[in-house]
Image: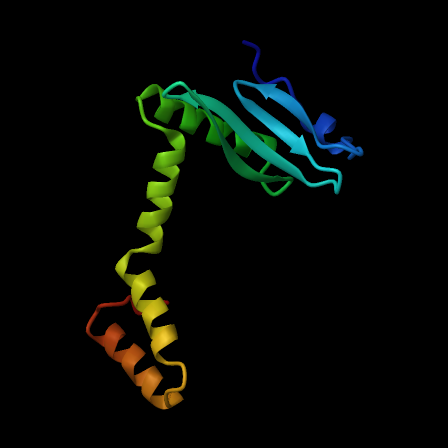
Length: 136
């Protein structure tokens, strides 16, 4: 299977058409070009006999090199017998539910309608007791 079929100069001249179209880079990586001109990196793979897909982000924010690096990382996950989509969801869940994130979300919701001075005091207490880092 051929890989690394695209080059940056090819991506820079892509123009949108009436219908979405894909440009293949090989190895399951492709760039979907929408009629609006947005270009989204996609990784198509099979896991457990089912076709699946992950999105890596929009070009040019996610460069060709970055998309290929993500592809290699997720192919390694797949080679280890794990579903890349499930691994990505688990990583996202872990980051959203660490103590700092939960505490800051709680404080934001709790402090609505409270005296601002008191809300700041509560946040300072969390920092002073080292429940939260000093640098937020």
